[in-house]
Figure 1 (tube, one colour):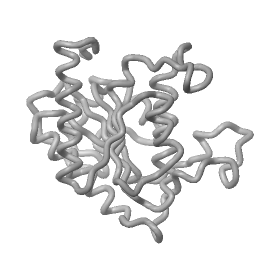
Figure 2 (spheres, helix red, strand yellow):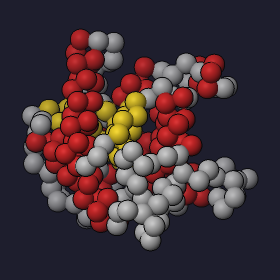
Figure 3 (cartoon, one colour):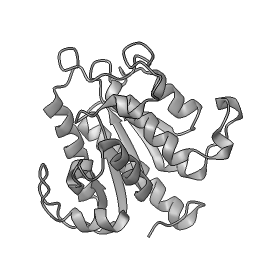
Figure 4 (tube, one colour):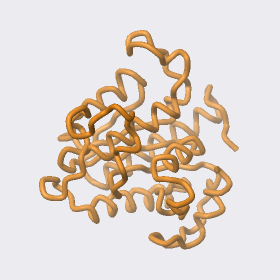
Length: 222
């Protein structure tokens, strides 16, 4: 999947223009956010009722959110472009251009996260926010699930790749899933105030991961 992403980004996809080359082509940064809808039911166990059994962290709500859907997409695109200007090969799922008929949205998210050097969830205040919360949980469970992670959060030992994940949120975002990101998986959760602040946080995180691959304990992805 890594090579497919790298090969596809310079080419126009259905909903995304071709991306210009970057200095660090091999350093993939997958940006996620509530910029498209997907079927929550496909991410939940068969015996769960999405109307009553899911936490209240995550429904995309166009009427009560502070952002319209196109504004959320613009935030993600501007953050992507800012990171690419700094040399990181940042991308959104829509930039890769894999048809949903080939791989569904949830499976794509997991595959992109597994293939990337860094994965960043950008979660602005958008109503109840169920879409991004469910997707964060799905990706983390699949990406970071090991024998050591079974059981309670207090007994869990997150794997090294947890350090490749950051969640960037607006200060007003509150959710059960975001609390679990830090408590259960020990992943980084940071706040941003605007697109410039978001880009700064993401660039700092990418630089940290790059240094950890070069000089620390994280493996170098090729």
